[in-house]
Image (cartoon, rainbow, N blue to C red; front, top):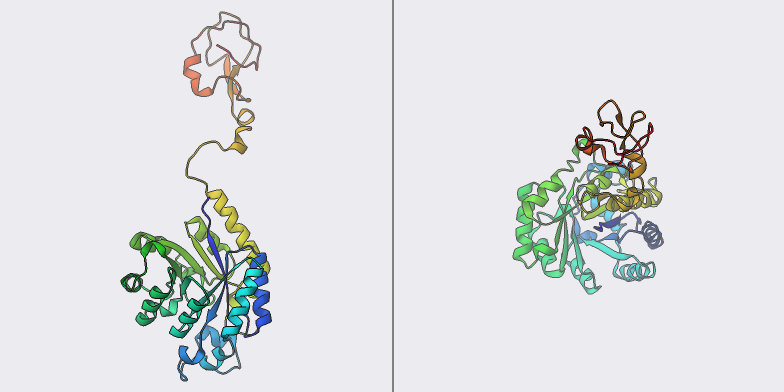
Length: 335
């Protein structure tokens, strides 16, 4: 059975509170996902003083300053917090992951022993960053929100030229609107990416609910990433478009069910249904009493359950033959 990697995206939904970050780890571990992912950045290296928030961030933080810098400064995790969260993840038997948003943050994660690099959608056109990521991490995941197919191609080329191996790259289809309207999901683009670049593909979801990532798994996603929060009513930019813990656990359970249900593409009776074949299928039986020596025909034969006798698919082989014994009505025909 193919195993889909589920990344529970805590992101900045800890609101700068280390205890909340640990509670998010608890929720992700309880949901039985592979990774819980945070974001590593130094606000002053990520945005200018003049950078304004995205529209969804302004809506989520109504009444707050529209400065990205001020918002992000409150959401930073310092190096000591990273050490503590990594240790806490180990104690909960879940993998720690974080997206670096600047070159210093890449170096920090490498120094902490992180070997899987997650490239966010906003950095897909950042050539120095892409080269640094390719050099830093042996495994890479690339999100593609807001990107054209050509931009994805340019990013992939930059990564490979800088040393990344194609077989170690996973590309996630993504839409960078929070929440993403259903009409804009364009989930089939994931298949186009797979065909165009010949790499493993997955889906990073920002819709409300769980049905789209579940559908992505049915379409062959190898990685699913989904934001989650302790409470959608908490203040902060990403809470409103995130799952709550019960929903995250439900999504995880559904994905595991879909994986099991996909099977091996080999159509044959399953072990669980073989026992029902006799009860559900039919046999050729006597439509009325038939005397020995009488010819079988459409008037004295019929088809009924159970399927323990001659298959109705052999009807033409039975019609015209002579009864070698007496048969009572409803008795299964034997030749």
